[in-house]
Length: 483
Ligand SMILES: NC(=O)C1=CN([C@@H]2O[C@H](COP(=O)(O)OP(=O)(O)OC[C@H]3O[C@@H](n4cnc5c(N)ncnc54)[C@H](OP(=O)(O)O)[C@@H]3O)[C@@H](O)[C@H]2O)C=CC1
Ligand SMILES: O=C(O)[C@H](O)COP(=O)(O)O
Image: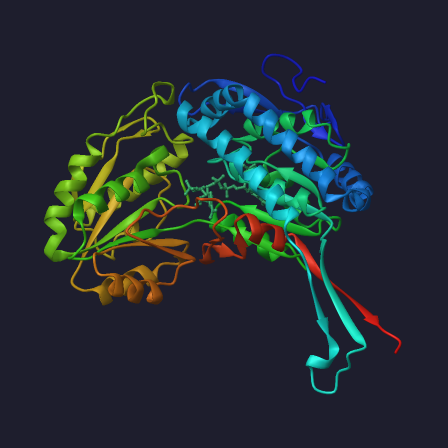
């Protein structure tokens, strides 16, 4: 069955069918670098949301009863389909969200790997049993069997920047755990999400197990989140939306992966050349549109001049332009995002920051920008740009670096660059972050590592095993043995 009505217009996926919404409305998806409409997605109605959730509820128990081995076969086929469609999907990702083709392709391959690993992990998860007499007064005749059961219908909401990988990172564990899924992709990212679901559909998975709901979060988001038919929400996206969502979703488990302001802390004793490679890769890949991008550098003042000079040298090597040419620095997702980033740079410059490189813009293409002498009075020291700018804050001690790192509203990851392993651990122990990287850039992968945001960066843990756990609950069956 075809997923398109015409060259540009996509259907949505309800109960195993690609259909046109009764709303009669579509949303134009404008490419961030071609500046033209590259597709249209359906603006799904509330009635259609009801239908999708109803169909997911109807088949959930059957899916739960389906043996793990059979579920595994569908997911393995899904991964295989993604691999055979990798060029086609990468092309769509590139056009839709402006990621360069090679990185888009890596995202698809990483997704297939993620799905396969999830299957393996799910096949090897097992429960436990407890005998009653290990507790005072308990008896050997009581045996508790603790197993994991699915939660029901999982709502997966994903952001634009990894439109395939971050979506599959929710869908795959949800399905392997025996849940059914309502998938709401970011609107800018919905075509890539549709292609990913086209691959899933090709696996022959029973109808209704997953529905894809397209439409603006501002219009259907609340309705989805507050829907009584939803049993768990896994959300990745901005902190403000995540906070609103958490208030609206009552009595369902939530996993939230939100924004970040990951610091790269550089000590005096760091190998500066190595640190610079990590920092530049971490800060600028895909124009800094990664939640885990290094978004500020806190460097000891004694090595700050040297570090800044090395950073400048490395940043100057970055390719800038169209994702079709493989550029690292590409136009941001839209003009509004670029306005926001420019606003942070303007504020910093006005307050006395030094522009070492950049502060140049062509529409939504922001040139890589290195700002030195950034102070805590400047917005750029605290806010998440989601763009290719790197503020450098000079500090006098580890304590000052830790204090500034921890004063942030965010707590996703942090990097510490040092040649003193004891100091590295000591600083890591004091940082309020989900993960700390020692002598490496902040990053989510490899994808089986637990991935955690604290404070304004989220709630709960992702990563293959952790996602499977968060999408299931423990169930205890007690056997009372007659003696
Ligand atoms: N910690 C992590 O793992 C990650 C965090 N992020 C964060 O995501 C942000 C960038 O992604 P972006 O897509 O712009 O984030 P947004 O917050 O704009 O959107 C995220 C998702 O939420 C949806 N949404 C919007 N409003 C509502 C609502 N009221 N109810 C329910 N859903 C809603 C969006 O739909 P629509 O597009 O239709 O508005 C989209 O699917 C950055 O802050 C980044 O740090 C990104 C990747 C990883
Ligand atoms: O959205 C993001 O930033 C991703 O979660 C980052 O993944 P990565 O750090 O492995 O690139």
